[in-house]
Structure formats: structure tokens, C-alpha cells
Amino acid sequence: MAVRQIENTLALLEFFAERQEPATLADVVRHFGWPRSSAFNMLSTLVEAGYLYEPRARGGFYPSSRWQQLASAFAEGEPVPDSLRNILRRLSEATGETIWVSAPSGLFAVFLDVIESPAAVRYAAAPGKRVPIHVTASGQALLSQMPQRDQEVLLRRAEYGVWGPEAPRDIAGVQKLMREGRARGWFRSASYYSPDLGGVAVPVVLGDRIYSVTVAGPLFRVADKAEEHAAALYDAIAAELGPDHLARTLRDMQPLAR
Image (cartoon, rainbow, N blue to C red; front, side, top):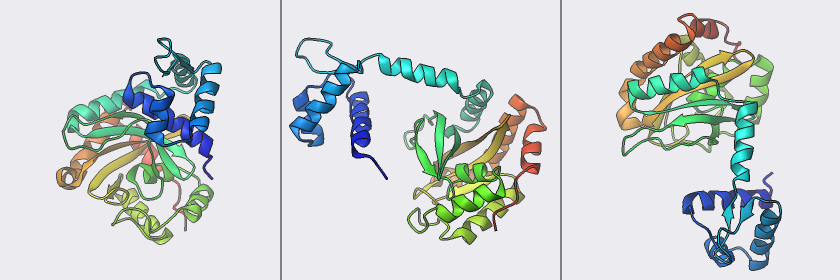
């Protein structure tokens, strides 16, 4: 269940990130349509906690460097491994499409690091984006490495019939796609989550952490390149982690939930 105050705070941060200049109380009220008293209380609370400041007297509020310090501390505590960042760079150069590494987060796969395609028409993504774990290539690659009991729990809790036009409509549909992906050695999505978008993904296991690496783009450009992009994934992972790493990961895939 979403908490409105937290949603509003996150929306405010995204507003500043897009605006990239100070905003007054009136600017915030006008943009969001919030009651003036609610907006004032939120801004005042963030100012008192040191997360907002006034660069110029009565010139509006702006996020302080405290946010950056927090983000840096988070990254230091649980960084994306350099090997995965290197894989992303290799894939970006090889495919020209949007590349990302993701990790499981409940019913979702969350993007940890992203390199967007330079093409004008592309899959637009950023770190922090979440996609449903059961109907995306990224998510199914992650599911393939989870114990059977965890798979069963997630597939029972997942929503069906609310995603893309080609998305599986029930647990059996997800299981079918995952069996096909396991047989191929890579997982595929084509209008499963977002219409007219598709991609391929493989799991990467480093220590006790499960990741997936994905290549994705508009279907008109990537639909006929799934095998080519899967080969590029294999090559990039082999170059960075060794030729046997992916083979071991695929061999150790967990039994599919039934």
C-alpha cells in the first residue's frame, strides 16, 4: 500500500531533478496542485532536516548536497560490481541499444545501472526503474536462479492480465516462457510489459547475489536481432567473467515452479 507523503516527497525530488533550478513555494503548489499548507509543511521539514536550502534569500528552495552524500554512502555499501559495469559498456558498444543490470526486489526487477542507447528512438530507462519480475526478460532471468519455493510464492502473488498485449495471462503462461528461455539459454520479452518494446536477458550470479543483464529496444529494431543480442550477451559475459561463468549459471538454474 502506497504512503502518500512518501510518494509526494519522491515526486518533489524528481521535480527538482527535471527543473534543475530553485523553486518557490508558489512554484511547487502550482506544479503539483497541492494545498499550500501541505506544500509549506513538506518544504519546511526538508529545510529543517538539511535536505533543502535557499541558494539566494527568498529565491526558492533547492536540494542540498546531503542527498548526494546519502547516495554515495548507499553505493559504497552495496555497489554494482565493476565487472557488471564493464559488461554493460561492452554490450552498449556491440549493440547500440539500451543495456541494464537488474536485481530482484519482491515482485519486481529493479534497474541498478543503465546505459541508454544513443538512438533517437530507444528504450528509455534509468536506475531505480522497476518492471514486473514475471513478465519481463530481466525478471524471468532472475526468477530462474531462485529456489522453487520462492518462485511459487512470487508467481502466486503476481498480477496477470494488466501488462502488455503479448504478456502471459496466468502462471502456466509464465512457466511456458521460462521453460523456453531455459532451453535457449536466454530469456526474451516482446510486448510483454511495454507495447512495441522487446529485449533479451541472461542471469549473472556473483557470490550470493543474483543479477540479470538485458539488451532492449523498440521491436521494429530488435525483433529480428534477439539471437544476435543474446550472442553479444554471452560474448560480453565471457570476456569479463570467463567462458565458463554463464554455462555454470545456466546449468544451475533452479527447477521451474509447477
